[in-house]
Image 1 (cartoon, rainbow, N blue to C red):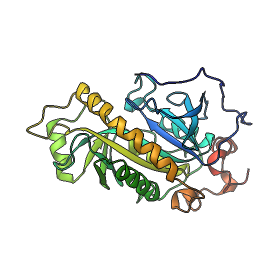
Image 2: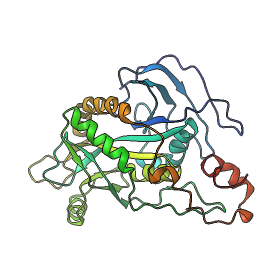
Image 3: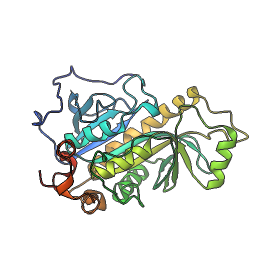
Length: 309
């Protein structure tokens, strides 16, 4: 699959003094197969960013959609070259923060764990359950400790806007639900799938939990638009999930997802009043007097308004 782009205009690297202008209030979009191209984006340009945590999955595609500044990132890189376990989640979210993003909409492929959530439906999950193994999902450490509130792991205000937008474009949409995040890259065994269903989860995927945690630490509103591609492997009357079937259904759903994105960006307004915007206010517990200077500098973009330089 391809993305329609102009010739890249700038290459930007992370430095102590950023050499690019941040677009405050920017809307971030994370997508993948079938969502590499969103028609109607104006002033398209490509921006590469180096972060203190390494390289993001790909260059960010910046532009204007329905009067709003957006930045798009291909989660698995264009051409789908990065496995879920290999994703540099910290770099991806940090890059959005560096660009000035205040909202991130994540479009993602999932399997359904419920009979009434069908392939080609869309779910706006409001909870996560972690079944990954040792993925890095925090910016903190190296002498600075923070404990964010994560009882409600997605921005409810942004999720509501996604739901309203999906209703407007006529999508079959389910509001709320638990997303179980597995390690991958293999799909579940039948035994695992049956156990997950007994746990009461609604959909299954491999990427969104870490994104949500890091977005909360970065004080970015995050919501997920989960595109249902299959019934995982628990459904007795459906064929076993395959990559071909997943991609085929995801491409079908991508048409609807693009319409939802076009609609929701027009509804997003600032300034933000949700808890996401102040997630670190009371979360950093390390005394400033003992914070390592190098770590303070590395995290300045995230903690600068709370910690003296």
